[in-house]
Length: 267
Image (cartoon, rainbow, N blue to C red; front, side, top):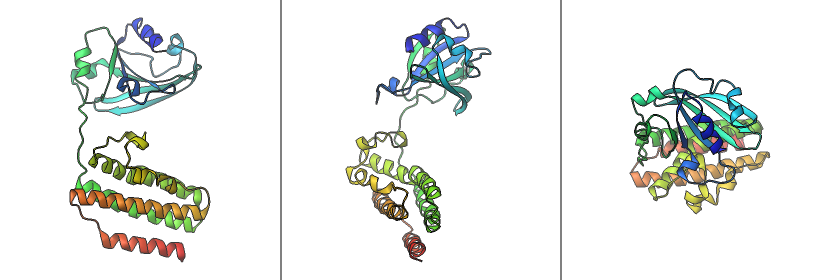
């Protein structure tokens, strides 16, 4: 499929360069289900990302989705395609004029095709991967919002609205618990993957082995238990981070919220 895409691009006058990014470019966590992430650098007006006809030379399309993505250079069109052979290719379409002012974007990339000596300009878009310590303001915000959101969990559990509760909990895990777990990993010199991927390789086993307990089934009792286990893990992780950076936790507020949550559950 990759050879087909390169061959297609070689015959398109408006295609200036092709870049491979994602897991294949990083040569990390690659398996038979890995996507191809292809950046098409182009000039002029093109049908790419707007129709499906242009894909015929590459393969038979099963399903596709046309989106837009914000980047440091500006908005770009994307087209996510699953071909009949099951291979998924995420195309993104970059006006070559964006290279006039190189921008940080790529973590790792591989140039597959360069028709106009753009390689050096594209390489200037590789960003350095830096590990920035969590700021006190971010720590405080995450802690505050975590406890605030738990009020909704308890309130709607009391109303027996399990579906809605699990939707809220998904947001709490992604927006508040995961950033703290990632920071704990960085402090202990582990390298977390994005969105919790490959968590078993970077999360401390002390926490990883307890994760199943924060994913509840559809029973009311299991959801209450998951909430309290989530609280326990969050408190341990935030205390670890607090001690490392010498931050402060709003102890009185936290104890007040736990009292309120118990009151809702038992009332």
